[in-house]
Image (cartoon, rainbow, N blue to C red; front, side):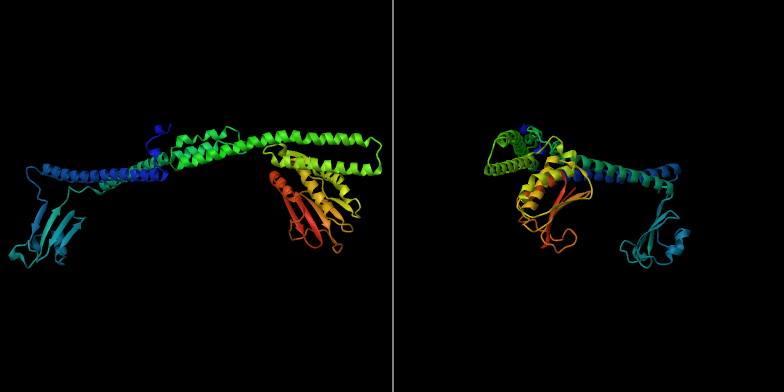
Length: 423
């Protein structure tokens, strides 16, 4: 397939651009050269035609429009006053009289010896030969039109040549743009088809993109297979254990066995939450659940109930300050996991006698505050931030928030620790 590539496409991109520029300049130079030569020849032919026409109109008397004068007195009347000023040697034009005058200085070696004391004049009468002013304007208009046309043609030629030179780049860009990067399929990388771009820089880039997309597509397929299988294989044992616990609860158990059963139940619940959390983070797509509308308060209450056992044996108050009842858009399971992590961290890291723990629900944010000191009157978020040392779950909360377009921050000082989740 590479053998069928045009010769230009076998060159490097840099060589193609340089060749295209050189070709465009060469073509424009040739065109402008022909236009200039044509204008010169046209001017010559026009002057000769005008002079011949003047002679034909005067036939049989030939016009004497080119004459030499050795004496100022013999010059045409309109030139005598000017000649008295002793003009320097050179060429002069008198548009009003339609005369062109060449002045030969007194010491010009071409003058006769007896004429060495005075200048000589050669007068060319162009009356009837030069174009009229109106004709000059028409000629200027024609030349301007030709120049403008050549400029437009040159610009068009440049655009065509440059498009031809960078066509493989544009073709690669279109192939990449047609791929939906948010929903990659296993066959998307084949749209690149790097073999059609040759061995130049564009071909190398196309091959790299194709291999990268192939690896990403393979990873997405492995992720879908893993999450599909793990979702069933990991949740099934948890379901079995939960069922067995429910059966054991119906039996006559001693107080020691009941405590052990409670620990198993809590460990099972933690295991279930961890599995759901990691599966939620592992999924690339989740069937549009990231746009679901849900209420915040029920999920907060559920998280408090699930984690309240962590406060057993601690004299700590939990206050829910509900200033609003917001409903937000996102993944409800992800939000529940995030809230569970924040509540769990608050309950675990608050020591006996500290507190209270305040959970404040605003219209656009959720604040979970661990009160470490009783020296403050109001619970305003501190300005310092130190999320370190409060559990691995906070990094997971951060990732869940990023996936859903929410914002998470941890603020801490010597009096309080505030976890803020805003939407």
